[in-house]
Length: 319
Image 1 (cartoon, rainbow, N blue to C red):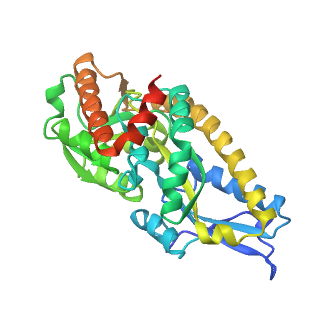
Image 2 (cartoon, one colour):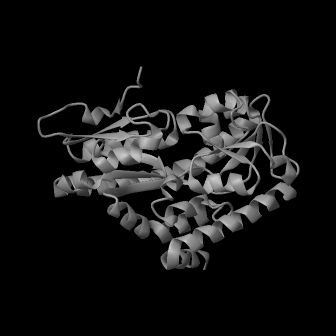
Image 3 (cartoon, rainbow, N blue to C red):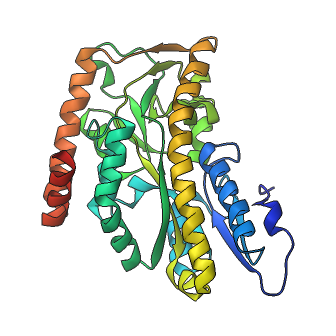
C-alpha cells in the first residue's frame, strides 16, 4: 500500500479557489528534509490563507526516485525533491557538491552554493523547472561491511552509487558501482548487494545501514545538496501574491534546512556512537589519500567537461 501524503493542517480545508501542489520525494517521512518540506507546506498555507496547498508524498509513494525530475518537467507532478548531484547530466554545476573533498565543511558548502546558485537556476529553467531551494545533507561518511585500513581494501568492493560523480568515484577507486535508490538502500545492504555506502550518519540511521554495514568512518568527504523545484509553467500561472509567498517560505525553508542539517550531523553521529555493534572511527591516512587523489581526478574531469563557465565558477569558489 502506498504511503499516504503528508498534508499540512493549514492546507486541509479545500476550497474551489485552492491550488493543490503535489510534491514528490524519495525520502522517508521522518527524514529532516521531509520534515522541512512539511513545515514549508504549513507556512505556505498560512501565508496564502489556505489558497495554496502543498501535499508532500514521502518515500517514493507518488513517483519513484529516478522518475521525479521527469514527472515535474512534464507537469505530471507540480513539485519534486531530488538528490542534487543526480542532475549532473544536466550541467556540471550540479556535480560540484559531490566532488570528494572539494567542499568539506558547512562554511565551504555554503560558499559553493552561493557561487553556483544562479547558474543552477538558469540550467533548471532551461529544463522547464523553477528552483525553490536547496539544503545539504550532513558531511558524507562511509558505512562499510568490512574494516578499511589500506587503500587496497577498497578493491572489488561493491559501492552504492546514486549520481554520476559517486559512480565515477567507485570506478576510479577500484570498486564496483551498484545503483541503489534511497527506498531500496536498507534492503540492498541487508542482502549484501552492496558493501560500502558514502552517506551521512543521518541517512544511515534512517535506513538502519549500521545493522548490515557496521563500520562507520567519519570521512567528511562532501556535503551533497537536495534540490527542490517546481514545474515552471505551473509556477508562472500562480497569482503574483502566491508566487511571492512561495518564494518567501522557500527562503525560510532553505535557511532552516541548513541549520537542521548541521544540528542533525552532530546528533546522529552521537547516536551512532551509542549503538551496539557500530565501530566508529576516521579514515586511515592511506585510505584518505587514495580517495583525495580520486577526488582531484574527478574534479579535473568535471571541469574539463563543463566548459569555461564551470571553470570560472570553480575558480571563484576556490579564491
